[in-house]
Amino acid sequence: MSLTLHQDLQASRLRLEGQFTFEAHTQFRSATQEVLDATATGPITLDLSGLSYLDSSALGMLLLLREKADSKGLRVVLGKPSPAVMEILKIVQFGKLFEIQEG
Image (tube, rainbow, N blue to C red; front, top):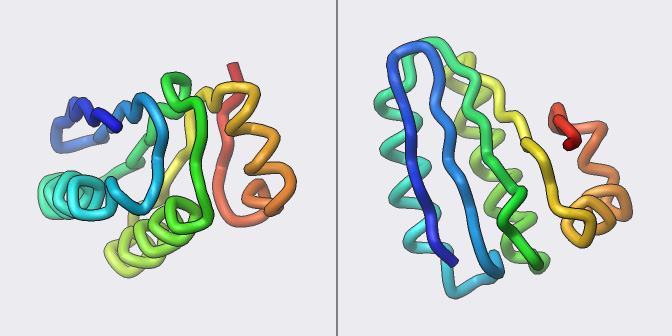
């Protein structure tokens, strides 16, 4: 998986590409901690348009990010999920936990 970060004091956008699996946990944790430390007001948008797949550990990492962001008064937005990823997010009902911006 590759990550591209764009941020300023008002918002951060992290673009994820490829397959988001357990193997990416160190890279994801490092990038999201940088975002959490730098973002003053939020939101933190994860651009999922380049993801072809995410596994259960990736879903867990998203939940941990949400928990950490909540503790800082920030919100996490899942942006433009690919059709395959959107199907997974619907199955696990992440729309109840996250704002999901389609297309």
